[in-house]
Length: 475
Image 1: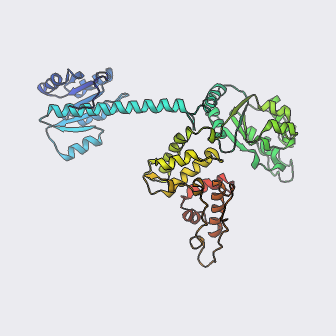
Image 2 (image 1 turned 60 degrees about the vertical axis):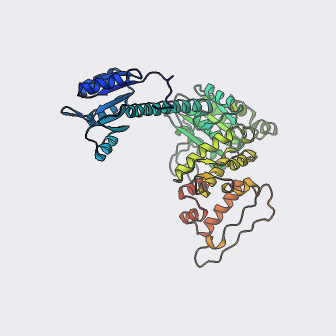
Image 3 (image 1 turned 135 degrees about the horizontal axis):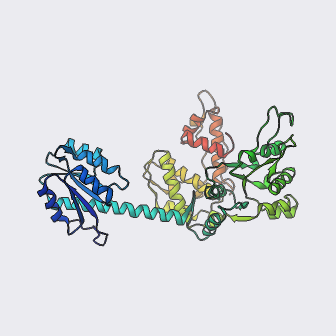
């Protein structure tokens, strides 16, 4: 008998299918004290029971008169609530076992049957399914409690964020997300869009700091042909592109004064005018903005319009820095570890205790973005199956980054230029993002801009390097 089978579990329903009456009735008598038993003599009888009753497990003979138990297994597994399937046969062979598994059988037993062994197999299968259901329920509960969309957190400071997102998402209210760089403000914007009731509509993301100030108005509101020197064709702006959906303006504190005036009018009238046009265009756009600056202070200093600030600040969500949510580091690290292990094809499963403690103790000036980068570094540097302390970036351990090896980085026939690395780095020099950006620039310089070669020299996949360049604004 199966020692770890929990007798407190609800009685499982088992279907016995065999064309020999003595066999199916014998199995009924053997198992009816343990399970709720149904019996059938052929495929039609079995399918009738499966369609009308919730059957947890089916034991079927291979030979059912002129019919084949393999066919029954295939049909049973296509039902909305497929049972676990175990095959019985007097014609035991490796080929039969393999074929049964290919058709979706859980396992295979040979006749004459050993009742104790069959009972052990049934209980093991049922216990496995129960554990799968428990794990799925637990995962769903954890995701519901500790995550919204891609935002992960169980700390007390994150619960108000989750509550605010759930509360404001179904409304049309304009949302201002504040927080330091790297805290996940864009993820909050995406979560608001996903829960907004219009998730299939567009979510358009604009990084305002990257907009050319000379054409910022055109970028946001569009322009007509000939509106200015380089306007050779008409172009729709980000507001029109997001019509019917959500527009996320990141780093809203970077927009210039003239554009602030135009944006204020758009929020008040829900209309836009393209540059060079007098035509008014109605828009239906949910606006979400974010900033790592203190907009209230900017209002006091006269660099941001007070009336626009109040228009944007209908609902404010504050994203706490990672140093204030240490409890989330384990959850975040585990999520990033699984993501990058899969992306890089590595069998990594966990961080060692000293590596995890290092992550918890570190102040994270770059917040969640820096943690994500650190875990990716660890995945790349570890041969598996664990990330140890020595696989984490040196900056986390308080060590100075070593220069890139001159020989490895120099194309054939060129003299290596050895980078200058301070012997006593300052706190700024130890910033992980700055250090890695410096290394990427040098790798590209040494390989004459060949990204594939640069990725190889850095120990990264080309896809990872491409993403890093995108984050650096170099794509």
